[in-house]
Image (cartoon, rainbow, N blue to C red; front, side):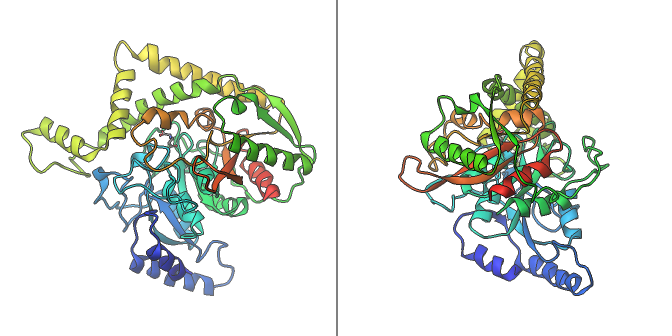
Length: 451
Ligand code: GLN
């Protein structure tokens, strides 16, 4: 099985991987064969998986899509990687992503853009573009990904695959290279909700090495897969269907909602009035946390160090200037600005207050409905290069995913049809499901019934 996927990866031109090492993969596969020969092997034993290159992996390079870490090999495994290794899964390689997970199109990677397998002119979405493209192109049956403001849901949507971002704190952040710590959350991308449930069973759980890990009893995320939907109240937020939503996306999403009605669900009109504010709020808080997290890359202990410099300060300056790409630098500048004396109250503190109001909007909505549904993104995948020099256009495309992250709620994307984009091509549309805290099993069940 591992060899089958290695062959497919070798023949692919999507640039979905940053690092493959067939010898390492096949050694792990040989070990998995032994596990499978024993009685009662783990359900995931012997199944290949690829990891977003934001999870550190012993023996493999761990780059975060950055020149800063292009030659970095971690001495330890991220908790998530460790858990999948223990289950006997076989690592196929490291998946391309936007540099430090900052992006919506996977065009910010030091290792180059990833192509969308449905249409190679299109972006795969980001930041987990490598993860979504690899699943869609059958280069791997399972992938890890991370979502800070939409990076699991949006690429899953653009590539026509299934992904879930769990409740903040359910999946350990230990060994996940930090972007914005109060938002970062790992999760799986796979073909189906059922596969995601199985993967989440090994991925989720309390980890004492992550200070924001939640102590919540382990559960079987497959338990609601066959629960009928009769009477399920689906909240449809008005603000997710306003101007700016492309007609082809709206049509596919409305058709999916109609199918849910056929399955016995009831549609409820709801309002999430602060949806629009999630963009400025997120793009203050995430860069603020990033500017602090990325201060560790100073060229001293690990990461890129400039070859020639004049003293310590010059070494920091040159190493960071050379090691970080434009988007990362932009965020460090914005983050340092909004945290600086005189601006902190006006920007950072204000953003934190609105973040709380956004979370309260969701709680009010969940009094009227069991799950919320809408589009993942306002359009289908755009063309490579189209928004590459326009950071604000990329930020605006995150409108429907950011609020879930700011509130720490679980959200998922499941394929619900196709749009055309501008190119008269076939580009996938994702339906977004948002649930209340700890409702992953329910979301996966609701998605499974549709699939
Ligand atoms: N597009 C968002 C950003 O660039 C979200 C990225 C993510 O979820 N990692 O910050």
